[in-house]
Image (cartoon, rainbow, N blue to C red; front, side, top):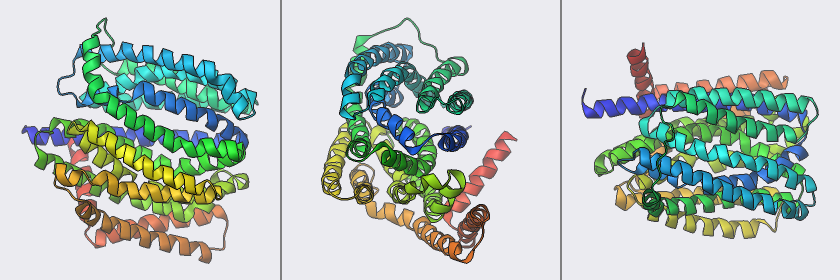
Length: 485
């Protein structure tokens, strides 16, 4: 089999399993989240949401940088993986000690002593999280996504059962704590069984230092991005209240479910694919262009469709008490619309070994975001989040700028590739929104009709207009089914 055909087959197969893993896991987690939302209050969600901000930042320090370096390095071996494994555990211990010591101060700052207790317990996920980051890097490197799919599904089922049981028995916010701990532990143990890599008694500080020279820039960029993305939650939790933070987090969750599913699949599959062809700019450019076209074709209609049915969907799934999250949900649909394009551009830069460019982009984008935050903080939470969406939109241009020189793929060319899917999505959104005013029926039936109409309009027009991404997607699916039949 020719090398190019073999690589294309690996990418398609890897993307299939990664999408299946993300889609299945996110789907089950979505069901669990709906059940928990009916058992818990927005204030309880907001309480754990504050703690998760600190955990997310600590996880960014522990997990990011080295895992990407393991994937990007051309000849990563057992010594590399084992060295990062042990170093990551030491880093997790250091971060947990900091969180443990800071927990009482966090509780006092937000005027709720329970926050400190939750932070100390939830911080334990740093240890399995460190192990999982190395396991996931090996999965991406070898494209063993089937094992990751099975492990993730197992972890979601276990953690979902734990959290729903705890919530039903009245544990309140602790049910979400139990969910997180159960998920990380179950996933780590399952990956030890399903993934072929196991840690060995090998350690080289020199190898760690070599990857650190590449990874520290990605770590700094990831940390900067994580802090800024969670800064809005920290401010809402402090200036306003836990209920409003819970509404923002819930509104953010729906569109994030879409982009994290496809976006994570793109990131996990395309980085090793780009890295394997990093010496051939023409091939990398063709792969980046294909990824941007396909991701836009899939993600944009989902998010614009979600924008159109937001109020009906929340009423049906979560109940009337959660309608306060609808404005945030719609704003974040717009904010996340071009997220896969961000990822594809940045992954191409990483694959070319330009982590210095990656870091510079993050610093510049966060400077823009900080200006927006300083303006928005003087207004209402809705205006503050709206300005965040504008900043995220501007980031599309910032992330694409370096690839004009690195790959010869300008932002103008990228927009030409995106535009057909964007225009079709806006048209579909307008039609679905209009249906709400001509369907004076119950929310369940109205939602079903709106979703069916949105799918029919978008898919039908894509077929009628013979859109290239539609043909490519259907041809790829047929080829995959034929190969695996």
